[in-house]
Length: 535
Image (cartoon, rainbow, N blue to C red; front, side, top):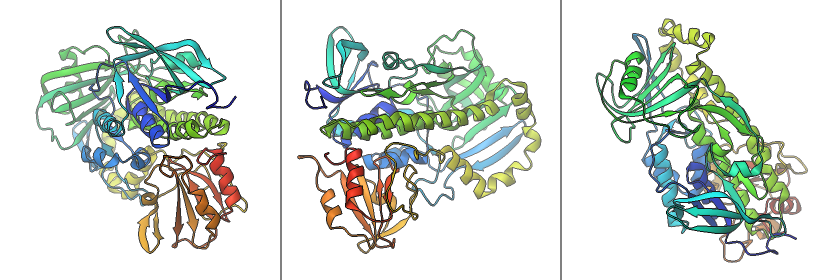
């Protein structure tokens, strides 16, 4: 029995967890046709930030959801850093890099709390409200109902009150210690780090410029100080040997750190500052983990519920948002397609688990160099001051900065082997392969000079027609697929691109289909495969 033939769900998608991954999943699913409910066991939105950076791919993916403007208004997109190597200080400008294929060629420093506030406000404006103080504790009577294709979730509200909520899909975005993963049977592969993080909001005395990110690298580990504190001027992130028995669950903010220990971490960093006041602090146990499965229809995992990283490279929040951008449009289309879409739904695990494994490897290597107590890592950090004279020359090289910013934006993530990455016949040779990200580039449409990412900055699938492609049949494909909804298939003719081909860009910015001839039959087959058109 297909979807829509069984009992009627309360909502299409129930999202458990209102962090960046959960809020993005809800926004993306709602923008692509699903009804959504979000629950979180926290009593309210506000909490201290653990992440402080967004990269280009996350911003590109969020752009069609109309939130990037507000995010950038709260961010520093021209950060500067001072690398403290003993008595030597090396300046590094981390602002706009030479990256012509993105509208966001920079590191973006922004508090996780601000990211969550912007996403939450966007949901509010779309009529999707987060139910705070509501905890998911498992499956209710009937659990997963195969005939109706639904999940019956058991929810408990603070202060008493229990309810059961039926949804077509359950998105577990409830963190490293979340409940949803336990009901999927997924193994939590990996292990703890021998190093933990200490976060603190501080008032400092000393010569540190508040407009600069200060980084101290020593044989014992790493210390960051930057003026993005929430309870005070400065936020500190430092590493130290981990407690063999962590006082808090992995990935969650643990107990406060004694002020004397915070003062010691600042003192031994060599940054030359003195702690005047410790307003807030927490220890954070760190681990490297990957779920053996990111879910099977109708239960899915995203963000920290699916993978756990070190803080290295600022990848955790970004990777969760990229999970959500991938999962959300698929749940939206599957909710309203009127039938099962097995290839589309299974492609989420296929695509994002491989991506998470690659990112986990990257953060593992970076964190080893930054903070590992291993003798080789300690030795490498101890000789960095000797390299200080050549570092300014290297950091002034634009290509080096650009390479670093590009690497953090995950250019290696591709979905070429995905079930929904399809090469048409004849194969196109002028566009990225299906499964690759569509790079930004100049284009002309109806006499207007635009950028490709300007064209795709709306929810839905975007068909980019080359100049000489036929359009009569393709125009029909762009009609609204669902009564009462805006079109989710958009057609653009590129007068700047000669040829007769077509490329289909997925809602998350990746190429899903390309063909050297704009054959309506092949394009329609792919659109139906992903649920953008009715079967």
